[in-house]
Image 1: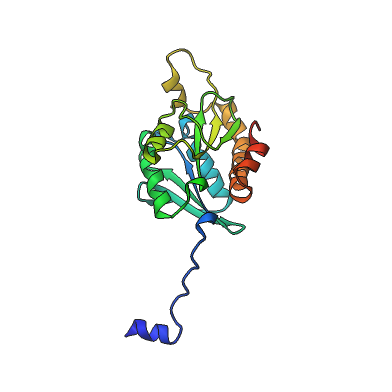
Image 2 (image 1 turned 135 degrees about the vertical axis):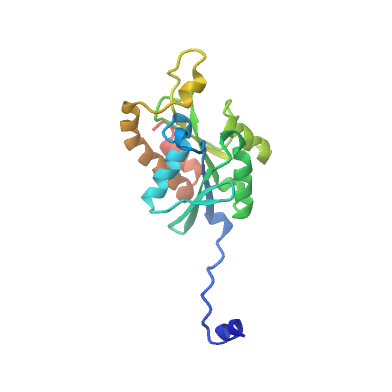
Length: 209
């Protein structure tokens, strides 16, 4: 009866208009959960997602398979995801949230570290191989495609032979941390450009920056 009276007198809370799926974007920052990974090179995806959330005063909440933050910008809704599955099982979280939010694959952007790029450089691509990156490898296997947008952030390859794992799981140097103060805002700019202007425009304007 209470529900009926609320409807009768227009006291129901107004429902949010359904979001156009083409205006929703899933931005996935790859990384490993836990304090010991917080400031490591392998977690640059988390750092970029955190930087973007901070800019828009969006707060992450623990949800199924990851932490989620949402905000709107010029009619677009960006959903930030930091998977809680650990790097090697990232695909499960990506697949779940694409379906949960009804987001088309072309509106997915995955942020990851890249040993083959100079520190701080950005390279956006519409598709490609996993490049030996276990997070991308699992996403590719789960989605059954290599055709999804990715944002590679260079961490350089300044490690001695056989020390790759130690290098990617080690913390940034003081010089790198200082440089990140400039590189993270540029990364956030690139992601906003992806949502507002499209991947082609963003690649032209940010690749190599």
